[in-house]
Amino acid sequence: MVVSKTIIILCVLACLTVCISKAPFAEAEKHSSAIGVPQPGHVQIMTTADGSTHIGKITVISVSSVEFETAYGTLTIPLESIQRIQEVPGDSVRSGKYWFPNPNRTRLYFAPTGHMIKKGDGYFGVYEVFLPAFNYGVSDRVSLGGGMSVMPSGSLKKQVFYFTPKVRLHQSELFNIAAGALVMKFPDMDNENVPLISVLYGVGTYGTPNHSITLGFGYGLEGGKFTDKPLVVLGGEQRLSRRTSFVTENWICPGIDNVLISYGIRFFGEEISVDLAFLNTTGKDMLFPGIPYVDFVYNF
Image (tube, rainbow, N blue to C red):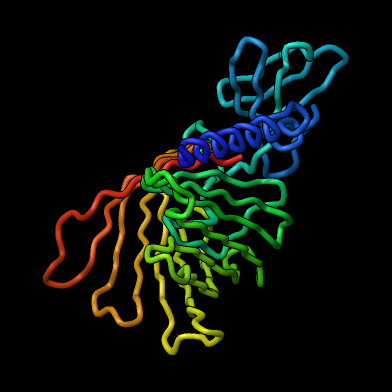
C-alpha cells in the first residue's frame, strides 16, 4: 500500500536524522565543554566512566586529575575517568538536580511560539497518531518544517500535506516575535480542484521558556486576498517540575462563536516529550474534560 510505503519512508528519514544528530562530534559540540574551571555563575555536570554523575565545579587541574567541588565535598577524579563535562547556568540546578532547558519552547500544541529553533536543532513529532511533522533550524533566524498525514486510505491523493516556514523578527531575554506561514493541501475529495489553505501569521511570546504567554494573529489567504478577520491564538506554558509543564492553547476563529480551547500536561526529558491534553469548545455544547489529544516529539 502507498500509505505503508510512506510510513516506512518517514521512519527511515527520522532515523537518519537521529543518527546524524547523534554523531560523536555533534554530541560533543552540543553538550560538552573542555576540562577547565567554569565561567562565573555556572556549574558543571561531570559524568565519569562508571556512569556516575556529579554536580559542582572544577577548582584545581593537575597533570593526571582534577579537584571537583560538590555540595557533599571535594572529589579527586582522574582525567582518564572523565567521560563528559557539561557546563550549565547555576540557577538551572535546584535541590541538587539539573533542570535541563525546556526542549519545546518553540511550540504549544499545534501553534508556534515566538521562540526559534537554534541552528542545527530540530524536532520530529507525531500528532494524534496520523499527523507526523518535522521542523529544523536552518539558522538562528529561520526554520523550515512540514509533513503529511498518514491516514489509512491507501492513496497519497487522500493525504493532507503541510509546510510551515518561520522567521524571527525580534529576540530578547523576555520578549520574542516571529512570523511565518501555514500552507496546507487537502485531499481532492470530488476529483475537482484540490483545496489549498494558506495562513500568514505573526506571534509574540513574553516570558522565559519555562514560564510564558503567547499571542498570535493569522490571516487566511483566499484568491490572492486576505480574510477580513484574523484567527487569534492565546496560550501559555507553566513549568511545574523538572519533567512536566502545564500547557494551554486557545483559538478564536472567524465565523465561529465559540472559543476552541485545549489544556493538559507535557511530560519531557532533554530530548523526548509527550503531551496528554484535552480539546474542547466553550458554550452549551462543552463536554468535560474534552476530546483526548496526544502527541509524541523527539528533539534533536
